[in-house]
Length: 112
Length: 112
Image (cartoon, each protein chain N blue to C red):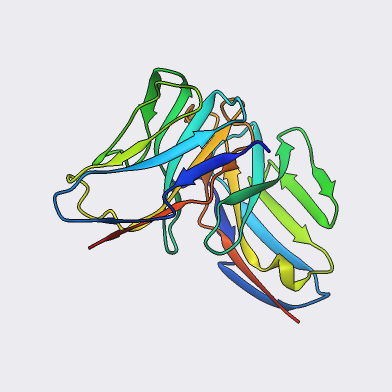
């Protein structure tokens, strides 16, 4: 079955540590996205990529970094510069810009 | 940058009743989409309505779009306990030229 896989489901970060969230899709979608969801805040766009080896900052990119070396993969690194990383992180993909997005089941990141 | 705003923030109904959620947005759009999110899970795409469409149906879902008022509504008929979830609208914000912009969502609770 085609879909998006996010791992791990739960992640804990120590102070000063970088952590990487994995996102893999086998839908052959060109576009991929990372969102952050806080209670009552809806989804906020962190980074998105329309094509391999290219990505753009979203509304809240500070303290985060991404890479898009393969069509199937779009990992997100939460760096130590992100002072409030506790949130639910969602990865999504779509055939193209503004097309319906398919979501993974998220990674919940907490601070130790 | 919040484009769509859902109303109400929360809605509680009994099984068998209809549920109506509204979404207002600010700038011109090409399409508007509705998504559903079960607690702790990723979003699932429900329906897409284009700017030249006024109404669209999918099973028990009915979506309307009024571009003159910059608003859309999602009607769920004969609600079931399994419809309990958060519902989000997303717009393509034509002028932004980036990615879909999600609202903060309406939390629907259907009790049996």
